[in-house]
Amino acid sequence: MTARWRNWARTERSSPVLEVAPRSVDQVVLAVRRALETGHTVKAIGASHSFTAIGATDGVRLDLSRLRGLVDVDLDRGRVTLWAGTHLWELPAILNPLGLALENMGDIDRQSISGATSTGTHGTGVGFGGLATAVVGATLVTGTGEVLTVDEHQHAELLPAVALGLGALGILVTMTIQCVPRYLLHAVEEPAPLDEALDTFVERTGAADHFEFYWFPHTTGTRTKTNTRLPLEAGARPLGAAARALDEELVNNALLGAVVGFERWAPATTPAINRAIESVSSRRDYCDESHRVYVTRRRVRFREMEYALPLDAVPAALRELREMIERRRFRVSFPVEVRAAAADGLTLSTAHARRSGYIAVHRYWRDPDQEYFREAEAILAAHAGRPHWGKLHTRTAEQLREVYPRFDDFLAVRDVLDPDRAFANPYLNRVLGR
Image (cartoon, rainbow, N blue to C red; front, top):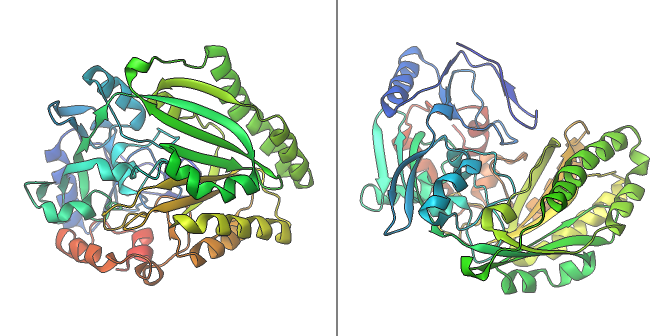
């Protein structure tokens, strides 16, 4: 059967010639080999939450929704092996009974574990890497239709590439994730002046387990969020059901949707509305299970571009972004998000070999974004920025080679695992070359 595909943000679409929903590794192998025999490319799709066309194909689409759940667990080492189509939102039900949790998470949990790691999804915390740094093993079907296991004992040299492989190296079928014991997060959310947040950004990221802030353009303030890790024995103080519903459903979704929908037709009102939102920002202090603090439900569709910069470059880059928005008279209703992550050794990680700060710009999905994103990208790229692989950007292979020291090492792995480019598509041709 075939079905037209489009992603969550409505930025990309494609028409696969065939859609297959495998239930086993053998069925994935069969699909890849049939694609090779018929001259089609093949791509796996998880939750379609990437903003780019990284998972798009006009060839054979593999729907991994039937390959979900727990495969195996090693409690002594705190590791779980999962089917690659497992969604992040499904993990608490799997991990909690085992006394385990992810070491870190982003604020969206709709993605599949394979899609999130393959595109470099991350949370915040300068002492913690992105989700892919927790990958300690994987089983994948290569571009020659072979089943390959990669872990500390087998083909270990491939793991830094396979853990964050952009979907270019094979179809992931299982993934082994290093977890940590369950823990609480003490969250403090409070307003702060933008200049203060910028002046203290590097210091605060170093002092806190997890620190981030949001800035609404056209305002002088931010909303900061500082999370401190605590053992379960410390005792949770969760938000009440009414408080969570008010903040996450009414304010972050219903009210935001109404506001950005109005601003789309009356963009001149955006600065005043943003300042009004800033003026009512209040302080919240609570403590809950880690996944309940990390994750926020996002029902309002948006488009996003995010770049990783050297940590120290974030304040200057954001000031340039603020000046550009005002100079160009853009009317931006969605906030800018600022986070951080530890350096890591993954071949194509946006935090490869450097502590990184992340600046993410957003637009309501129905708003025109080309000029704003183009101007923002020029600023962020000029600070040795590396674009998030699953978010909008225009970088090419030659430009990316300049900011990734091991770019050609990744291409060498690709030549071995997918010599005939069975997993290629226009996005990968642009960012990796053919």
